[in-house]
Length: 460
Ligand code: SF4
Image (cartoon, rainbow, N blue to C red; front, side, top):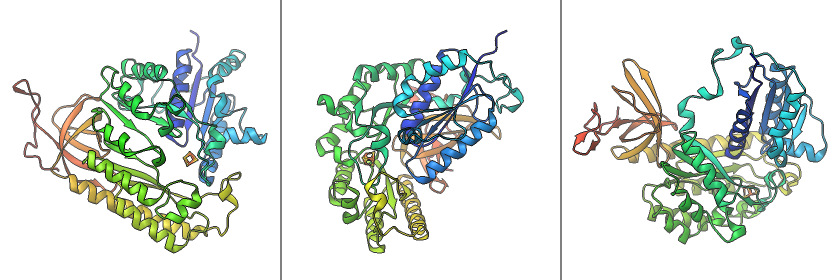
């Protein structure tokens, strides 16, 4: 019997990279290759890298060296943003047999297949696989197929002064609506996804070339049969306005959770970052969202330690972040990316000060999360079941509410992964991570669809 060729992928960085990896894996599987977990010897090992900070750069290199040592006879491929930059600089990378930038990702499957045709397969050692010898890509756990990323846009031309992305991802391009809908249908019909996370490098730019906007795309996605939810990934505040936000109210599948990138809550720093808006403008957007969608939550990214950020700038930022009241703040330390204007700006903030500011921002984020989720306690929410695992004679389920609160609850019976369950939100389970909930007795066509063990609505 002919042994199937194998590949593995390690993915770093953003949702766009995760989507690219998922797509690439799908293309290779369609050609008969078998996916194995990263770390298991494989014919092809792909590292889809990130270079957004120097930490991401270092991680990419570390993973690359793990790829090499786990598959000494395999083809080790470095792709993604770090690969793009290295290619541009013409640098060789120890451990990588092939460097393919973002622009070459499309041709990667063909390239890899032609390489494979000339090589003897790397034997799969079943003992190394955490899934055992019978594992195959088709056995992916179902919960990984509930929420899927759909990339609809690539590239950015905003050139924020700290950001390397326009150099690694190129100028903005939107995926045509026909292609988006085709992929979305495939994700739901073939792979069984119930929630699509619409993603892009600068998602809010989608459709600009043709005079469309993101709302046109969301509206069309409502046509996909059996799709239960549409969630948007990161949005740039500059591309939003009150009229767009007002229309979200009439898009029933759109999740009321918006990740709107802020980066700093100080107007002077915002200007030097080249962000093109003020804190007042940002706050007005969030207030408009809350006006039309009262249960909406907002998350963001904050960069601390930007060159010249004084304690006063930082305090202003922290105060503004608290004023907006984010569900979650993804905090990053400034990292000079060669080739961007801010990389050479002085004074740089000493690492220990930046680290301390980072910690304070993370603490503020946790505090806001707790207050917000406690404010929802006792309220009903719909949760998309991602897992339903046996636990001490019952089943423990987990999933996300529409507004991005992760919940857990138990019930005597298992619940189908990918179904929507109504719960009552309860107490915090793990700080900053998830809350307990209880199932609500659902009545459908005059009869209870299942028993409720916590019918009084108290969380556990
Ligand atoms: S908007 Fe700014 S931070 Fe976002 S990708 Fe474009 S240049 Fe980078």
